[in-house]
Length: 113
Image 1 (spheres, one colour):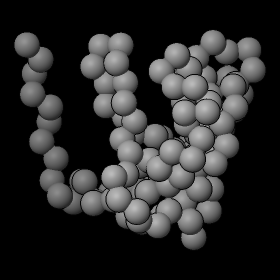
Image 2: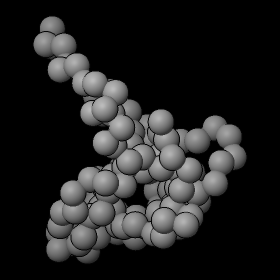
Image 3: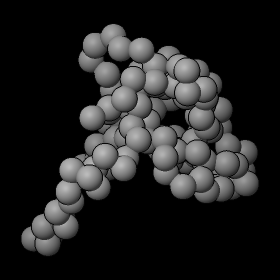
Image 4: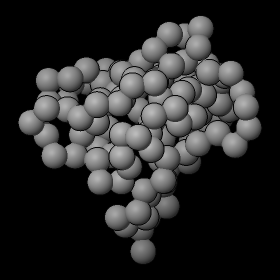
């Protein structure tokens, strides 16, 4: 049995800038087996690029135009020489993975709370 995660305050949670977005570009990262470069439209907040390990879980076609939740204020990092400016949120269970998606029509850039 795992230890319970550390409790966070509402102030800690408010530090996370999560926004609704639409995936507008998907391409494989050269010389990698599991990485996609994904560009997400965040409406008035522009576009952000992220590098994801979703190859094998989703095809590029399945990801295109998907309405997702994007963590915007994650510290930028480089993976396989590509800049990652945030994170797509997903649930995982063993080898199963499911992106968190929007079930109603809200504008790209809408704040998630």
